[in-house]
Figure 1 (cartoon, helix red, strand yellow):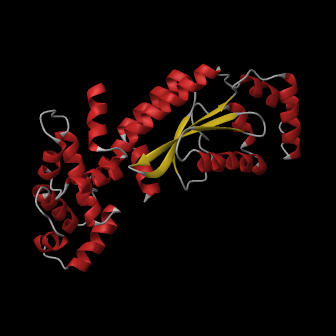
Figure 2: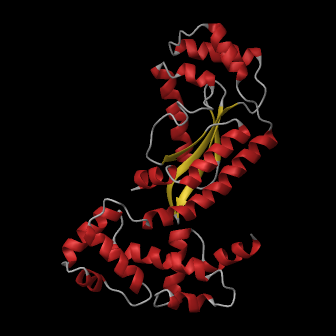
Length: 291
């Protein structure tokens, strides 16, 4: 499910606009990848590091880059992390979450955090020779010293930009899950419409399956196949989206909103809201007030 969701997010207009603006402003490539994805994150992108592009031709160099991505995956699950590769380039990753679940990373890098020296290049060249890289040294040297150099403050700001956008993607991911798919079966489309119309009621699986003239078993199977989530989770997400809108009204108490959108208890509402959006309804409202 994470790969499909990350793909949907990557194809969304908000992500593509952000990627374009981020790269134009910083001169750096940025990528959105799933947790379980093991690919060179910036290969073929407009702002790919030319030095790294040269190394893609050698499998051992690619393997070293993938090891960096793996280390980032292992360490960046809770907070942003930066890892330095064997030839001295820094890569950074910021976690993207769906509620409390990690679904992927925003990554950038292939930069130096300090101005490279001749000795540093010579050490890197020896590493590359050990990997069997036979690119002419002049080409390696030229692209190596063309690599972007960021000060500590600049690098911190770049990571902060990614962190802010990761929070926006986390909220957007719930909306992506709820979007109708053009190829979904009519049964699922009718079910979604029925749920939208009755989401504030004490809605049961039996009621929805009956409304679309299906058995519970067949409905569950088709709904999960089309949406990637089960009926209960989908209903919770629909109610959470409605609650987000109601939280904009400061005159409504959180408890009123919980019952208005169909939750039977405030405790259940708080638990589901935090699981889906990674923060409590009260914290979400407070952040809206500060925005």
